[in-house]
Length: 254
Image 1 (tube, rainbow, N blue to C red):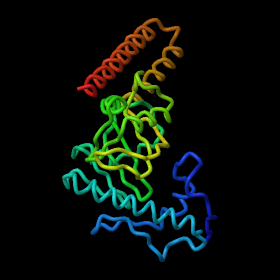
Image 2 (spheres, rainbow, N blue to C red; image 1 turned 135 degrees about the vertical axis):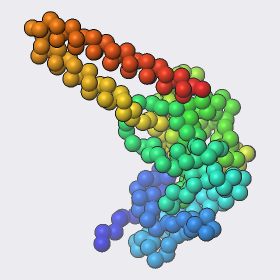
Image 3 (cartoon, helix red, strand yellow; image 1 turned 180 degrees about the vertical axis):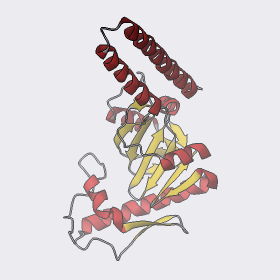
Image 4 (cartoon, one colour; image 1 turned 90 degrees about the vertical axis):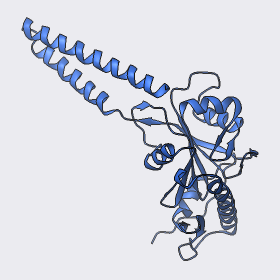
């Protein structure tokens, strides 16, 4: 069995090291009865240093305290356990959507996103939909009883290379250390941001059909009738794709 080497738990910028998370991630379980994170001493890495263990215990204690307050303030239907983590949102829909999606998957286009807190033993993965991130960068935002301050939302945009006051194309998702104080403030550090994205199957199909149509048009370029038919089909496909995109954007903005 390969044992990972000791690592620095926290980076120079205050972020929780990904190497540290990976090293101890399998050693932490979420007790479904108590709703608290527990360090499994039997699985604990054998060569863990005192610094690592101290940081591990502190992070787990902070996350447990934070998670307990969040869950107590939220309706049970707004809370979903996902493996050794918990999703809490302001609505049932957002909680269910967030528990099923993978925000880190690189896909084709921006989408509206969901607003939620995804609690892990080392901190939170925070999602904000396109409307809520606009509010958060100006006045902060309360998610499941936790106030995400302006500076945290602005820092998330900064991680993504976006500027406050400029167009934000979709929802955002970012990591945060667990030092959030419900309805008070935050000393949390923000890192690892990404835009909320998804693949629209119909757009892929449309693109594929257009490519095929172009190939056929080139192949039949000597046949005026076939060329005219292909051009008409191309026009219909492009019009349908544009109409669908416009309709999607209208639905997202409602």
